[in-house]
Length: 278
Ligand code: G3H
Ligand code: ZN
Image: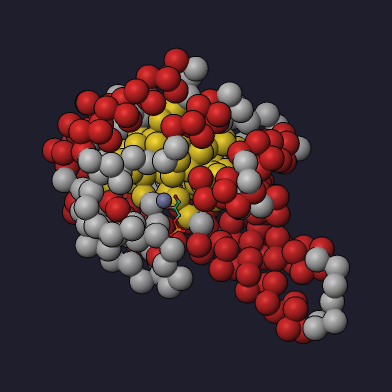
């Protein structure tokens, strides 16, 4: 079906007090797996494409148009989101490609500059009806606001939203990007305080490192958009490895990408239900 707007899916999650899965697309097979899993589960999903994935493909349009076409061919309700965009030019390109939302990630910039640029990008996105996710700059290594140990202050977060006018807020509550084990400890009390202080939906990044039950407790405490990438890549790659190890002479890439897509699809369906269940 045609892409659904991100704001519509987020509004539904907010109204129901539920989580909304946001899974990363890195190639066509991952888009197909995410859409297939969401359709199997009968749940909505955000397809998100990061600036890193854009670099991998040498441009935004090929992977964005492929994702959009896959969504249009699928029965799943899916929105398209530009994830971790640091380059304003990339955001502007996405605004013309049918994205329902963008995450502008200027957390690496000095605080004032982050606020000013985020506010400017937000005005441009709103002018064409696109939803904006933003994050407050934090010191803390290459992961910025999502480095382990970094925490978002609720009052600061509320001020940032007031200054920039964004629609959703990425917060640092204990998760960290690219964890391959689901061992993160989240600060649930902080999530509750952020939920009370910040007037827009909260976004959990680095959710691959968070176990099922803790994800559900984070949603119960107020998290809404739940971003997962590494965990699904891990499932995909494990399936590729298994097929290649069992068939060392294999040359047709469909013979290992197909089973990997199926394995990821099953995990998407399972995890989407975990995230969405009340
Ligand atoms: O923005 C995307 C996510 O934060 C994914 O992080 O790869 O650790 O799940 P992850
Ligand atoms: Zn992230």
